[in-house]
Image (cartoon, rainbow, N blue to C red; front, side, top):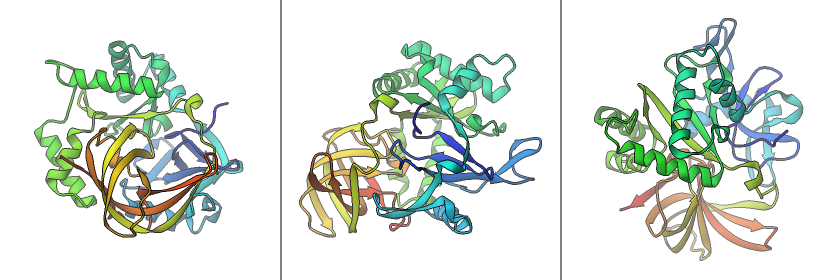
Length: 347
């Protein structure tokens, strides 16, 4: 049985549905956020198995709502000595089901009587697979489709496993977006406007900044009238870090400008940009900021090597116990910043 990987889901003994965050977890629990809770009149689900979405939007304000809910279920809250924060995490002995995206995709591509959305997801994966020559065994599907609680209005959230596979799929999608008559397309003008306006309401971005970010979101588009997203996840064999290898300690907040030196893991969660030529604009004047990391998925994959970025977030000292060294990073997606943190490409 494989380890818990980013964007897996787990169901607890009281039927809460949590989405797994990242690939590095303590031995006795899984770091995850609460997304769905049982509700007899919930919009998600089928027949007598129905849920409501407690995490309405992917914002820090909405994530805090889930933390507040879990205060009455403290077994799902965890004071991490490694990350130095209080967070949601599911004890292993409270997990009743582990939902694996690749297993669900394998079911969908062989399903004899899929519903409309299930067929779209399988067809989309098969289409990208045939064009990219990345086998469907490296594809998964997460979100409501993974859990069998999807509705007609649900999106398709694809997973691509493997760093090389993800790069090939990225190049394939970018090529297909530019082909006349392609069944896969980017957002049209009205869809893009709606997306950008939504982001300006939820994040500290101007419309123009949101539009710049959207142009760089290669994994988001439309297929047969349904919105889809594509998320790279490392293969289990590519995960070398263990919980506790790195320790993180808060040191306030910082605003800085930097040049990206390595963006190879910027499409993952957390998104990691290695940086150089860092200029502190506000905050502690440390001289060893080596990376900008984001748990806010909006800021993943929006800057390439040699491009400049502006970042505001939590300053953390990183203690690397393997390499026996210390450095600093800027973290976006912390509870302390309360959604005011960001990464912005400087075009």
